[in-house]
Length: 534
Ligand code: GLN
Image (cartoon, rainbow, N blue to C red):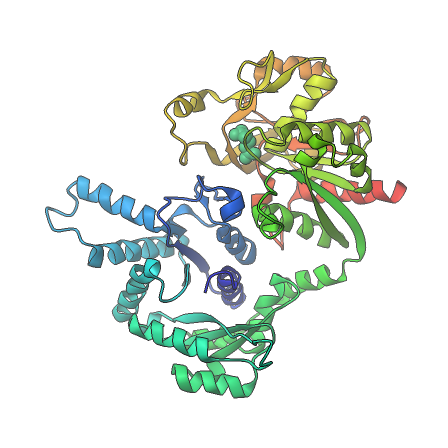
């Protein structure tokens, strides 16, 4: 069933197997027609996660990378749309040599081809494939068919894990296994038999229910694994291990026994629980419109990056989301910002709420409150500085105001054409690019080196015609592309502000629990220090 944590389950299985010394990779199958997640509205679908090679994917890929500590590539992500697109491309190229191209077997065969290629690409001992959606859904039947074919092809190399929800209806107060029994039959009707069942419930599943599920779902009772609600998603691998999931999977896959060494992971989990210094960071953004439930999903990587950086410094960070439209309407005064140890503006697109964000940036700049701007957050920071310090009245981004008197942010040259042709899917500047850092800056101090590479997702950039004026006014471009053409990081010197820094890239995509991102570390450090003295 969707929404009960398949992504975290997949990631956790990955971490466990990696902790056994195996090379692991993970694949996500999303059953929708969109070719990638790039054109989806974040308030509907959550964050768009960008891979190293520039592919725009579902936020689950972020979980995989964070839990596995591995870089994952575009071949590891497929949607129905992407699979069909490839099949149709091949058909047009006569690659099927005049044969009838049919949903079965050609679609599952293409799915399997991709799975095998991803495995080969990662040189993985174990490849975990997460099939999105719910068993019995019309949309994912074709992917289950692929799984069946794979199991048929090499029975001992495939383990089927079913994640099932075990409800405890409040009027009965008892754990009910019927939905799991039906789900298991539904899986059987697709020609698949679960080897392991992860029983998701609010509490650990008892022996009696394990046996019941075992009897009715054809699995061994010890292969029914408790998956109770936990305080943090990072507790999940340790929790599965309590039921011996790693060893069970090796057994199913007929792999030799290996010890699980979760010590590095557990040390991080311990740090996260021991972090005591509390600070609150305000995230000022604009995608907060669809009720408070999707909030954390829209910026999930940012949130994880902040929290992780905190844990590594003994800081427990609380996040408060402020809708920039409330600053514009006057519902929230800018002085509200003085309640926070730091302010972060994440990425975004379009006009709504932008003036509120610019106002907020002005306030934190003038009041020495640590500021961290990501992508749009950097562009708006440059606009604020241009307008209020460099004296460039009416400075703006061409994204919103193409005729602005001072387009300090303008469209990237190679993006112009794409925009006139309404070519929006997968056409931004995407993925990892190198960047050179200037010595003696906040950026170079944070990274501790002068050459970095970070992931991008943008169409607009700092207009080089204004770099001179902005620099004269005191803004430092501390990170630039190796050819010096693209401003990647802007900051104020330490003498002028404790931490005022924005990046054209998205550092949040490279932060991992065991390797916190240097810029998030530096931002939080400064926020915590400044907070002590305020
Ligand atoms: N809208 C801006 C651009 O396209 C910023 C994008 C972002 O924040 N990811 O350049």
